[in-house]
Image 1 (cartoon, rainbow, N blue to C red):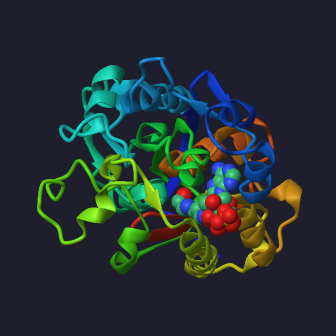
Image 2 (image 1 turned 180 degrees about the vertical axis):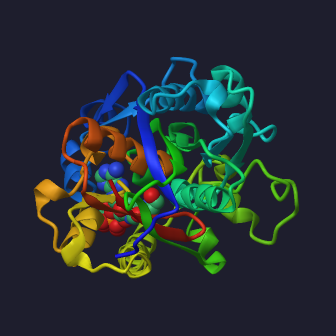
Image 3 (image 1 turned 30 degrees about the horizontal axis):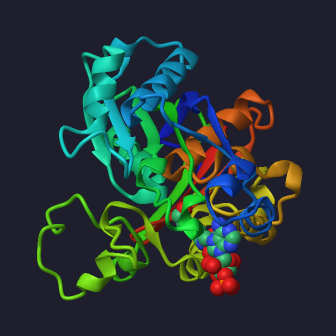
Length: 338
Ligand code: UT7
């Protein structure tokens, strides 16, 4: 095992919107069934922004406040805010800027990271770099998504999958052998078209050769919503998350025998089961909250981490593996000694 981690988690927090959208609710508005969603994905309900008027930065602020308090700090102690999201408040400034404003974190530098569902893992490796260099001491690392804002109600294969929420941690320099002891991040830009939302950016107005891909049979402009070839993504996701687990463990100098808890990205219960089987961890040592949250992209792991700690499922001394996969494709993993 790596003898000295660079950074430790000093506090955690999360926020999920109050509105609950169940599979039964979805049955009333589209051609789907509770049975299909439960069997294929494992989701029973998801938390959604709905008509609450919240934005991504609002959810992130709630999660961040809880993490700062949990770390015993004040907003002005925060040196940097790194926020992973694919559903920012606006093009610019970053969503992290609004979190800074909401918190009153007047001494921080704030910016966003875009790496889809792997975003929070990417952000953690960036934070580790700052701490290693000695540049910052208290860093907020947030994953926050208003994913239902990108969901296409005409596409039952994606609409049922997503939820909204935010998770946050405060990280600090490690002072003993507890902290982030291994990590791995990777991407493959060849496969961007299998999972993306291609409107909104500077390419949206360009004439592209495949105009027919932009509109569905009803003339609905698909650019502003999530497009996913679920089956292809599924197969790649299983392989990439297993690779993430293996490489993060290798970086930490451990094997699955050393692991005591697993937090996979919550995209599909079947994918979670495949990772759990690979690292040989029993059900009680594997975090599964997708039943209640849906897929919250970059928020999924920090939300699950906070819940697992607060529920007492993760304890001091546990060796926790987190692994994620998402659009890009991007994938990656972390090993945390709690
Ligand atoms: O977080 C980022 C990474 N994302 C992922 O990792 C997601 C990976 N993909 C998946 O989890 C799965 O591919 C899905 C859950 C998205 C889909 O499951 P699947 O077993 O791959 O289903 P499918 O897309 O192959 O569709 C099977 C059938 C189709 O009907 P036919 O053509 O067999 O008659 C679909 O039209 O299920 C139908 N279907 C639905 N039926 C009821 C698709 N969506 C629904 C629905 N309700 N919501």
